[in-house]
Image (tube, rainbow over all chains, first blue to last red):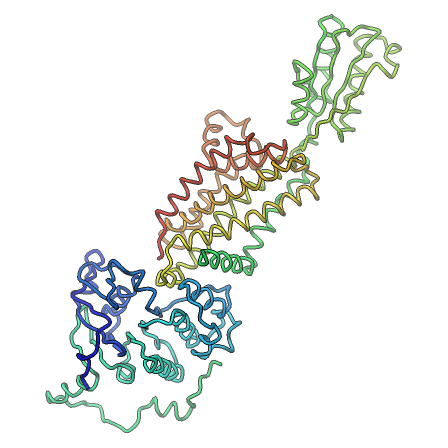
Length: 258
Length: 360
């Protein structure tokens, strides 16, 4: 299971801190992300997940510490990093007067990349919406466009910041399948979420963050084992299925928005 | 380079797809121009008429005094026929009367010079002169002859308030489009996180700023051409007196002025602490210029202190440069002072815009 040490780490974060005036949003965080894994940052709202991700994406400057992505330093070589990463931001909009095709085309140009725009849109299931405007899309479709835009430069690493927040169960499961398919392509994925079942489903390893500090890092299974070995017993009865399974069984797995 | 072109194309597409931006940049200035351009401000008062008295004899002085007392015209004493021509060109008089140095009872030879198209004014002035002559010389029989009062139609085309206004509106439209289109677009990009998403791509702010500047300058040039075409066709203003270099100079002013006001617009959206304060700030910047930069009326008659302040405003020079080319066919060399002021303002504004630009 833990063959991570034998594989190359593609992201190395060492003791990074981020202060906003008097407030310390990130208070000395270190972790490595291994090439090809899905690494999750878990934590309640305001824990500092987004700040960490945005530092790695080059959207915020470090107060101290060091972060290396694919041998490039975040503080000094951010332009090189931006070329090899794909970014899906939390709550983002796109140019409202352009069609989806034009938006993806424009972003491809910004990366000086020439993907087949139709391929990119069909990858996220939006080919039939290529002439639509961003505002006409449902929440799940907007998220998928955001992911399509993240794919235009065929990135090595994908950053997804709460990709399923606000989506209905169908759209969420569809998003999980999509993220899984990127992992199968060999991409490294860093994901933030506050849904534990999402982390359990997708992540090879997770870091649990609270108040700007990492409390624990490990694979979901090992963290659960560790807890149960310590004598913890869940007060919740374990059933063979969840209410969400019931919901999906009754309403069907297909997306409702198309 | 591809990225710049990509931004120019995308920004232009977005602009033309938004109906409100077409309304404000193309339709609105045209409506103002047509509304004010058809309004004849001069028709409500007695016209100014110049008087050049070349004679020193008593008879000529009597005639001069009688003319000055006329109530249907306002007489302005002028030194020479050249001054009269200049006044005609500027529009400060509708005609001028010249009394020759040989003026005598029997041989009057008074001339009235006016512009083409000023026929009603010419008839009015002829009548006034006829009556004055009759009263002064008491020799109506001597002036019944046709050659007593000569009328000249000077080869001067006065463009009237309409000509003044068309040039002013072109300047105003450059400012309004420059400032308002970018302020609101940029703010909406900022608030919706579009800029943030762009920040995550490898492009630099320069790509974004220059891409938007170029697309908007192109729109401003189109707007200038449209306004001038409507001014010429609908309002009958002669643009640039047929001088190609005057046309080129108008577009040069539009480009420089466009970059100048677009930069101010970008700087305003960067400087605004929030969405509500940006329109207020934009109005604070544009409103004084609307009235103090010679868009709707000349600033020459304002009190000296205000006049100096007017000359500090960038739109004053943009509007004046365009006006000189539109009305008098001035080319780039003739408008170097105006171009110089505009250029300096452009550098300052672009510097501020580049320094203050923020992705969020």
